[in-house]
Image 1 (cartoon, helix red, strand yellow):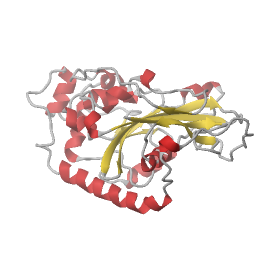
Image 2 (image 1 turned 90 degrees about the vertical axis):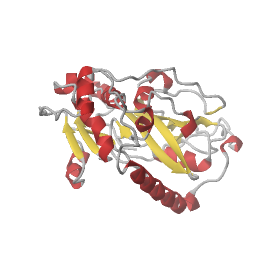
Image 3 (image 1 turned 180 degrees about the vertical axis):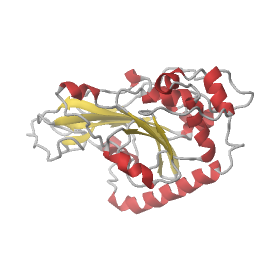
Image 4 (image 1 turned 135 degrees about the vertical axis):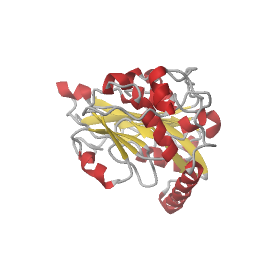
Length: 325
């Protein structure tokens, strides 16, 4: 397990770094992986921080898979508004927790992302190297009535509709408002799937943009955001608009489980999903090509050799836009 925390600070972990920078990371974090995690740390405020409306800025909770060094790394991220920084400008904080394939708990990514206390929401201390990461709590995630889906759509079966998209490897755009507890929706839908498929499903509760070479299947898009204009560009993607009344879904086996909470006799797994393995292999090949093209830009300084910058150095005010970093 690796971790990285990225926010605005007068002094970062790397010598001379300040403004938006890494303030904490695990000892031994591969440099290529560190660079990719920093690139995942962007955030767009919907409302200016410091105002009453700023308290409802959405929180990014995401599970993405990075292909680095020929291996798949599962990245659990929490990225959110962090008030005002030391320059009196808008701030954010990103905390990434990275798991190898051998470290994946059966509960799945959404259940872990719901563990709010496991992620940093503020950072006020000195930069540091994390020598030992705390483990996630033991969580059981079993099929149950999808009550969050029922609350938001009037029909718990819609939790099964989302789970069914794994069979077709379709991208899904969920149109939501900041008040929707999107991670609860994802957790209910993933609980209908087998353990391996839970971890093959990438997702985010607040989609704005992603770096090249990074894919995401389940995307929550804020109603009225610029991303709304891009939805129609993906012709084969499913759109689930939670701001509008939805029709009664077709009663597939997973839709029935979402309504009843009773587990099926056999979980949906990758042995009976046509095309899933081929899709995953294609995504890995693309990610490997992207990594090869990016290696020339990588700082090869090993993390364990990076000293903390000396105190007393006057911090310069970073130049950046007001609401997007």
